[in-house]
Amino acid sequence: MIDNTKNEEFETILDTIDLSKPAPVDEPKRQYYFIKKARGYVKQMSEKAGRPLFSHVTTFGCQMNARDSEKLTGILEQIGYREETEEEKADFVIYNTCTVRENANQRVYGRIGQLKKGKKDNPYMLIGLCGCMMQETEVVEKLKKSYRYIDLIFGTHNIYKFAELIVTRLESQGMVIDIWKDTDKIVEDLPSERKYFFKSGVNIMFGCNNFCSYCIVPYVRGRERSRNPQDIIREIEALVADGVVEIMLLGQNVNSYGKNLKTPMSFAELLQEIEKIEGLKRIRFMTSHPKDLSDELIEVMGKSQKICKHLHLPVQSGSSRILKSMNRGYTKEHYLELVDKIRTAVPDISLTTDIIVGFPTETEEDFQETLDVVRKVRYDSAFTFIYSKRTGTPAASMEKQVADAVVKDRFNRLLQEVQKISGEVCSVHTDTVQEILVEGVNDHDSLLMTGRMSNNQLVHFPGGESLIGKIIDVKLKECKGFYYIGELLKK
Ligand code: SAH
Ligand code: SF4
Ligand code: F3S
Image 1 (spheres, rainbow, N blue to C red):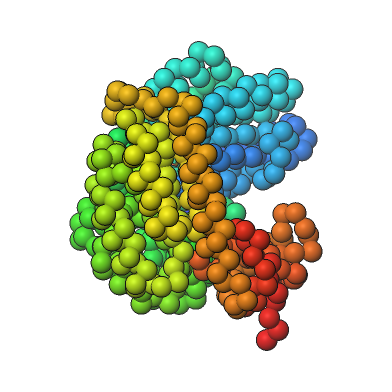
Image 2: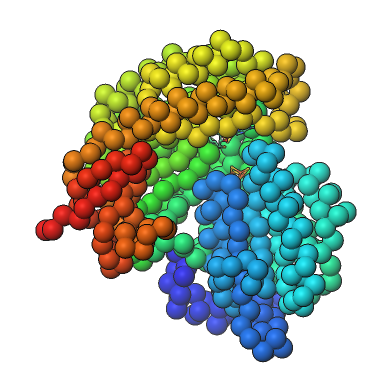
């Protein structure tokens, strides 16, 4: 499935490509050439093996990576691999990695080690690694030294070249490595295979310029680049024509969208344009940085019929001193003021957040400030993280890193508080009727379906699979902490 072009149209484009000629220089034509070329190779391998070949993409990390993985899957499918849900059975395994915290990296090394045996048993097996972790020089050095059986390594900036890199690997022997330090390029109109037919992520910008002092993302995702609004709108229109009713606009800091476009445009303006798209029912976005959250955006959210009643607004810490050291660009007071403004404009909004515990020099008093914010805002939920030292970031060389036992204790206390409050906050909708978008069959009980409210809370209810992808009314019967048990309303 191609998000921007229908499949048949794509085939017509491929038909016009002559593989006896050198590859075109312009993108995306160049990649279409390599998709066609790779198809030939995969077909040959499949004939030799006497069976179809399968691929599996494993995603680590955030929504950006999830969306990138859909692009990887789209290309793998176009070149002839069938999608396989079990990694062990796949002939092409690719890990789209995350490096935001150290434990994310360790998980990847463990998993690559386990792939070695599969590679020995299956002569057609290829292993690829991409994503944020690959942008770190030490990681690639380690892979080159200790994991020689990897076939393909590339980074976050050249993911669009996946087909070309596969061809390079199949025409050579040994590891192919292609990592770019940064890019100003955005390549549009490549294949992508969506995980859900009714909802989709849509990148509106890439990279990050904020350099929060603990964070590695700006180093591995490069400088901030916004997509042209016309390209975004065109993509969403095509998605809607293909059955999508809900979109999630993606960027590390969506609130600074459009600042560097030739004709600058604010995120609030973009949202208003997207709102006009007929057939689109729900708009979500992620992530909002408090320092760039404008009054204009709050106003648009208040008036909108389609923007979901959920705002993820990472606070990171409640201590203004720590926030300064984190280079976040706001104080505790400014953050709480923002929350007030949003709640006034959108009274029933759900707020969620990210919090880091144990940032260098964090004292018990600083931590108490964080607890204070949690108690004042009363988040629907909060992702809590233990600070992880990332080499190359300013915080890594800060003195007074907090002792592990102290951090652990604070983390547990924070988690307790967050969970207590979220239990109370989440149940306020009991006995009301809410619109939900039905997402699928419940993971644990096949008689139940699972849907999502505008505020992002989950509802499980008895119903049939034919409801998947539909927006329906349910009565919320009982709150079970973080989710509801509901009942379908007869129309
Ligand atoms: N762009 C988003 C965050 C992306 S990373 C924003 O600014 O809100 C997702 C979350 O990971 C961050 O919000 C932060 O809470 C956490 N995080 C990032 N770097 C971290 C580190 N070094 N240690 C622990 N948590 C970290
Ligand atoms: Fe990291 Fe800060 Fe950028 Fe978010 S805004 S990705 S936390 S540097
Ligand atoms: Fe991880 Fe990269 Fe996202 S480091 S959190 S996958 S941008």
